[in-house]
Image (cartoon, rainbow over all chains, first blue to last red; front, side, top):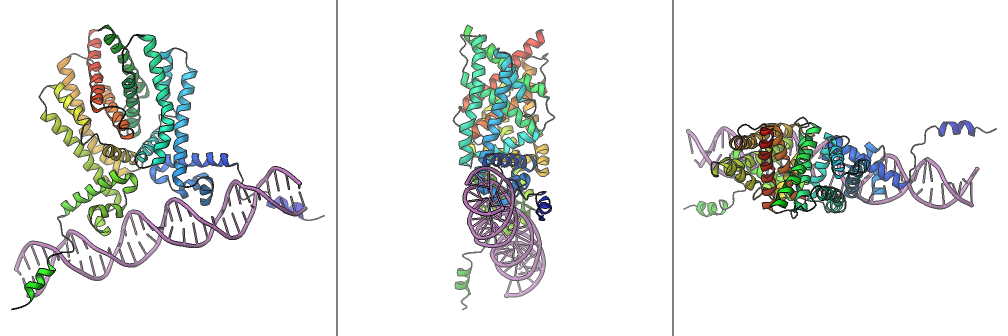
Length: 221
Length: 221
DNA sequence: CCTCTTGTTGTACGATCGTTCAACAACGGA
DNA sequence: TCCGTTGTTGAACGATCGTACAACAAGAGG
C-alpha cells in the first residue's frame, strides 16, 4: 500500500482557496464593496480594503472587473435594484387599494433594511460621486426610472381613485414626494434621533392627503 | 555712482512669493479647498491639488493647519456659515411680514449662489463624510443649529400670526420643510432639469400653506 | 544697511494607491 | 489517474498620498 491516503488526508483538509463561478464571485465582490462603504465610507473604497473584506487576494478584483470604477458602478447598480425590488415586493404584498399600497411603500421607506444609518450613508457617498463619474451617472439613469415609475404609478392610481377629474400636476407631486422622502432619509442619516419612523410615514401621508385635498379645490374652482 | 539702482530694478521686479497674514492665508486655503471640491469632487481633496489651486507650495498647508482633516473641517464650517449668513441677509432685506420673510428665504434657497449644481455637489460630498469624521460631525452640530433656528423662527412667527391658537407640531413642521428643501436640492444636484426654481419655491410654499390650513382644522376640532 | 522674525518653499520619506502578470492550484472531464 | 482549463494568488511596478523639516527669503524694525 502506498502512503497516498495519509498524504491526501493531510492535503485535502485545507484547500488554499475555493474556485467559484464568475457570477457568484462578482456578487461577493459587490457585497464586499457595499460592506466597506458602510464601515469606512468613501475611504473604504480601495482595492485592498475590499479584497480583504471579501477574503480574497488583491489581484482577483481586476480579473472579474476591468477596473475599480466599474466595480463601484456595479455595486451602485446592485444597491439601486435591491431598493426598488424591496419596495416593489412590499407594495405587492399589500392590499390592492391604492392607499394601502402607498402606505406599504412608505412603511418600507421608514423601516429596516432601508432606514439604517449605515445604509443611508452609502447612498450619500454614491450621490457624492455622481457629479464627476460618468459610470455612476449612467447607472443612475438606468435604474432610477424604476423607482420613479413605481412612485408615479401609485400616485396616479391614488388620485384617479380619489378624484378622477383632478388637475393635480403629477410630475410636481412626484418630485415633491421624492424630495420629502430623500430629505427625511438624509436627516435620518445625519441625526437618527430627530424623528421617529412613524413620524416620517405621517409626514409623507400628510403630503399626499394635502395633494388630494388640493385636487378637490382645483377641481371645484 | 554705484550700479545698485539698475540691480535693484532687476531684482525687485519679481519677489518669489508674497507673505500674507495667517488669517488671510487660511481663508485663501479654505477657498481653494472648496473650489477643488466643486471641480473634482471628493478626489479633489488632496494636499497637492488644493495647494496648486491656491498657487502655493505643498508644505504651506501644514503650516496653517495641523493636518488635512482640520482644513476640510474648516472649509465645511466656512461653507455652512456662508449659507446661513446669506439666508439671514436675504430674510432681513425682505419686508417685515412673516410671509414675506419666508418667501425671501425660499427664493434664496432656489437661486444663485445656492442653487448651483457644483455648490450642491459640495454639500453632498460633505454629508458623505459626516458618518466617519468626528471633525465634520462637530462642525455640523455647531453650525447647523443656526440654520434650524432661522427656519423655526420664521415658521413660529408665521403660524403665530395666521393662527395664534394653532396646535401644529412645530418640530415636525420644521423637519418636514427642511427635508423638502434638502430633497429638492439633492434632486437639482443630480438632475438640474427636472423642475424650475419657481416650482421649487411653489412646492415649499404649498407645504407651508397646508401647514396653516391644518392648523385651522386642528384648532377647530 | 543690517538683523530678526516667520511666512514660505521644495525635497524627502514611508505608506498606500490601482493595476499588471507570471506562476500556482482547484477541479471537472477524459 | 492525469490533463487542461481557468479561477486565484501575491509579488512587483510606478504613481500619488499626507506629513516633516531644513533651508530660504520677504518684509518690518532699528
